[in-house]
Image 1 (spheres, rainbow, N blue to C red):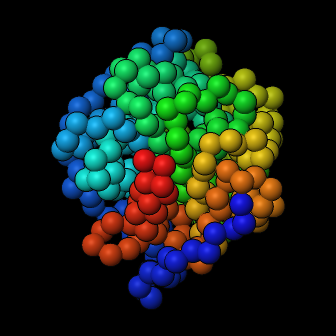
Image 2: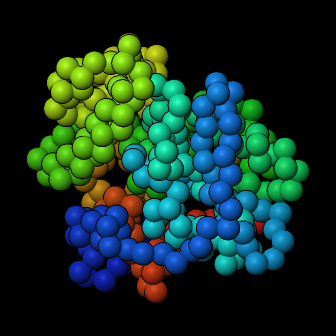
Image 3: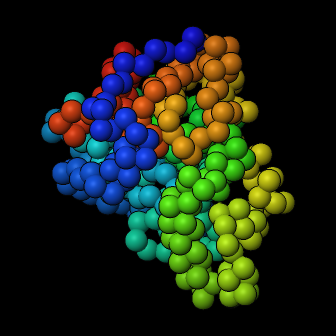
Length: 320
């Protein structure tokens, strides 16, 4: 499909990418009470926690929402989507990746940008409920990369899955990783690193045979973290191998499910390769929207309903 012309125009004080990103990540609050939390035991004996939000009326449609790096299902951007959809008659299932629900996961491994197996486990679990005839996927940042990769890597997509939405996606991981290491992103880089190392220190106590305190102390950057932990814990040869194999960019041409990708042009996390214009022009199922503003997951709009939340709803309503 040709690139979609975006209509997103925030207030002037939210046009700066840094302002919209920080406000959305730290300041924004969404009142969306949790209806039920469910623990899904995975095939390898580990678990993930699922947060359910239900529409007021009985629904046969469900949106599955994936958060970003070191996020969780209670973050405002996740609950904002859940609120928008449940108010419009669609149930919402917000996934906490392994170790992201407030309790460390059992295994040494955790989650990463290219792990689609846990998403498949969630979808299969939902299908066993035999309640939902329409499924939608929405992911943010890392979660968006997981969704794009899942839709294009050759999986058997269930007939119930009608549409996908991905927001602020680093679909070319090496380039996005390089951007995160630039001085302009030091605040974000250091915060991610701090959170990841804190979790790794807990894992080291539980799995001392897997990694030493000396190795953890040597981690100075996110690249070091991906080299020392992410790659080794998840079967990659190196950080570079992890970035290459996990990037969704290479799978975009193979997506057959209608999919909307929204990446802001002032997103400081994204490199030029994360704006796949050529792939969108070649694939009739891939709709690429590149608003001038929005930062990283910061598409602030009126009355605390974000542009990407309303945009996702309108995108799936074409098929509802």
